[in-house]
Length: 218
View 1: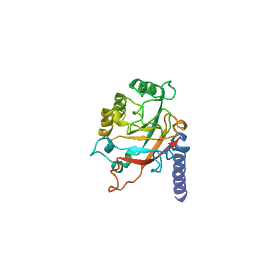
View 2: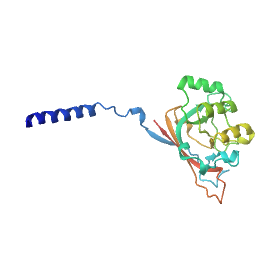
View 3: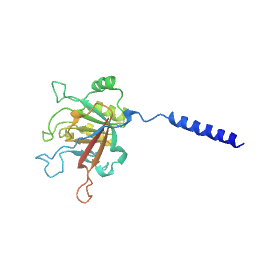
View 4: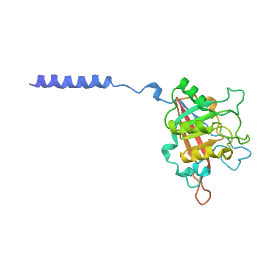
């Protein structure tokens, strides 16, 4: 009887060991190799801030919508998608629906709930320019791909396209300008972390605040 019990127990232990050995491990692609700080250094025009990188929250575009401090935390960590305009002769052009279709045919569908970084060159102390994406393309990304925000390297002038600004605000999305380091990022596969500064309500409405932005790269 004891021998039979020992054999049964031994068989069970062996089966458990074999099962554990066959469990799939974490794929190497699920790991991030390094972190890129996309936060710009202070510029001459924004010397009062810790950096030249700022978040333009929905409240800056439509009063009564989310301020930076009211944006849910789950909307501040997202997959990062990079679209590049620097290869064009005219770097002031905008991302169009055709550009998105071409990008997706090459890199796959834009991840749901992503943040889109648009690389077009220029410094953080450049003159403010319109957002480098057409209203139709931005609307598609927000509606069909549920994009949470847009990141650019230069100052933005959202007042130049009020319909686009309203669409962004009503979607609960935000714009980050004055970022840097896009050339060190792949088109897909990164994870971005956005950390807006905590602004006391009695000092500012929190609609435009300094922000630190980090990209975890595979």
